[in-house]
Amino acid sequence: MELHTTATGADDHTVAAPAPAATRVPRTRRWYPWVVFALAFGLLLADYMSRQVLSAVFPFLKSEWALSDSRLASLTSIVALMVGLLTLPLSMLADRWGRVRCLVLMAVVWSAATLLCAVAADYEQMLAARFLVGVGEAAYGSVGIAVVLSVFAPRVHAALSGAFMAGGSFGSMLGVGLGGIVAVQLGWRWSFATMAIFGLILAVLFRAAVTEAKLARHAAEPGPQAPHSGTGFRAPVSTLFTNPAVLCAYLGSALQIFTAAVLLSWTPSFFNRYYDLAPDRAGAVASVFVLLVGAGMVSCGVITDRVGRADMSRKWTAAIVFCTISLLCLAVGFSLTAGPLQLLLIGIGAFFSGGSSGPTAAMVANLTHTSVRASAFGTLTLANSLLGLALGPFVVGVLADHLGLANALRLAPLTYLAAIAALMLGKRAYPAGLRKLVAVERMASH
Image (cartoon, helix red, strand yellow):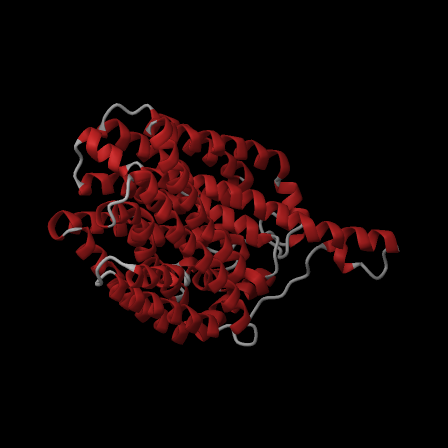
């Protein structure tokens, strides 16, 4: 089931309007949403480039500061932890204060913090700077995707959600690949400085091209930023937590992103240790697998929208299938010795490792009222961060200290079992979840 709404007030009167005006409005509506998507996607790339460039310099920091794997992992996990803790309150603030204004401020904060990473003198200073990176990045994913989906029709939400969330993988690929090259050529500090400058430039471009007024004119659904929304109704925040299907989507998404986060953080070290590659070459090879994670998110989102076109509940099934494929391929792949077959299986597993992100985000969007959409994605980001992005790399780092990195990576895919269980429950609860949303819509109409 999808909730169809009139695109804009101008579109309501297309028949009565003069022909030139009728053609101008649709033409504008065709290109501006893609401008919003491109700039928001670019900032998401900068977000993850600043976050994951650390993985490329792990070997340098480990050698220079004599850090254990668990300490290295803490530098990654502190960012995801702060994202998890702050994403919901900051997303709620963005729903009220202005999403565009918040997005620009976030980009400036995380870019400035990344510059601080470049001048850190020891582990403690680096940890403090990474803490600030997490503060800046906390709600970007949730608010950014809410802005993007606000100007696109619901029928393409899974594909767009998958593509947008894949920006994390593409940004990680660029951060790891370019970070490793810059670190070898100029030193690891310049790796952080490069990412920071890129983020600041994109923040300026986004502020110049995207405004709340333009988003309101091009809104695909009535929402808090649309002046024609009528009653100004805002759904209760409690609706984000009282719908069982939405809760299952949160949990399933977080548990499936656990392993994807492990791959983003630890594949450079895996290739450095077990394939005897130098840090820059290890980063370059790892970036290919990170690219597969992102490509899988996009492709799986497109597939999900196609199979779920007639029956939205099939999107749950698609998410379950993606988790199952990744579980089998990664568990077997990391159990093999180094070689082509291992690389093939890890590559297939990486492709599907984050494939459920688009379907679960689409379910969250489809089951929550548009007035609290950013807050809903904030809750999704909270779950993804605490149970996946923060927990995954840290748990594998701790296990690696005791069992070795290869054994730790072999155990990581088992979290897909819990993800599959949550998604199966979500599919069963989906019809009841739609009825709860209809009840909220009725509240809005009175």
